[in-house]
Image (cartoon, rainbow, N blue to C red; front, side, top):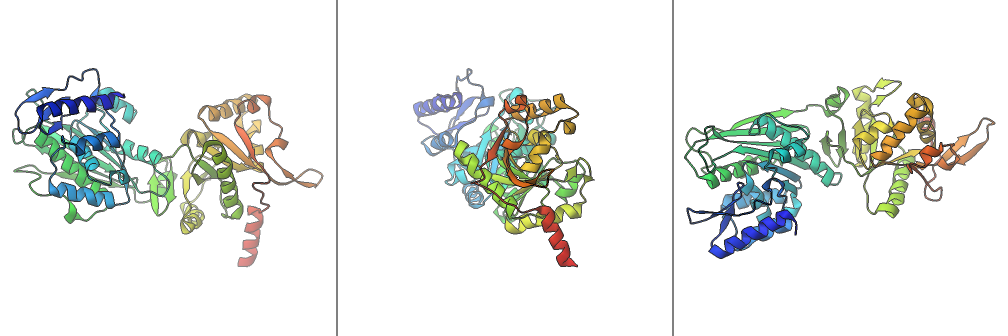
Length: 467
């Protein structure tokens, strides 16, 4: 049995013994409703910081005789959230934990919750954020947690799904006198928009469960706002009291393409009317190109690559990738970028923009991915002159392999020095044995895909038509 499941199982056993509904405290205690006593869970061998419960486990606990009380306005809001197409990842520490149970209690949670984590120990939070933080209970930490949750949501969801990252960090009442303020910080991140909420709670106004409930309700309100639910759906009845005041702050990226060109973000993805910013998805099949213009050859090549990969690794998603930067020509003007991606938007095809013109650079962004490219590009990919020499090429291509990436090459008609044309595949390319040994490259059979369409010829024909 996994540690998190063992924690939940023992907690439920304690609750059954006392025959009263229970609530789980982040501190590792089990609070029995209707009693002023707290029963030690005695789960010191299980670190609460790594308690990542599955939806099945959480829902079983929440719907059993140990179910936590849920107000009707909370249940109603969660139903609206579950009916919304957005999917989310939740990171919460220090408080707001009840919101996770509430979300999983109301039927339909699988439509909303991709993952929820409680990184309670400092080391667990460092693992999620990839860095240490000076102040754990702060707006900045909540924002960092929300962005990390958003990037995780992109990894766990398919293209075309609206995603939200939610972060919550609190300093609430504990089992000792706390000198500092009792406070809660919640943040949401949707790529282009980040929102944060902070409140200082009045000491002595509520017990620990009451403070956690406030943080949980604020979390649900923040999620509902990120899902663009109407304001009158939010929980408001007696949420804050007296001088308590909720502070809100919103940061928005007005033009994601401009942010990409400035180097402020790494990727901008367009899929199914959603814009996913700075959340690269690994483990996909990417058809890279300049797409000037997008044509049937591109569509066919990606479809063939997907068919070839599905035979090897099962169902896999494909996406187009275009670098706004060129090693020789520099950055593309914003208007030209928008012109080139418009056909993808019109046809509802997923496309992601980067500033990575070289395939080793693409691999560093999209780990464990497959890149599909044509014969001409593959020839250049194994030319030492583009890497500063033979050793540099081996190092860069070995790096791609180390990152779990693979290259699938589609053949095409090529003309030799004598003017003879023939269909060429990657098997016709002279490749050093060291690169062959990497197992980085494979070919798409001609029987699966062949297209003699030329982007250059299409541009010439388009130019003639416009005269």
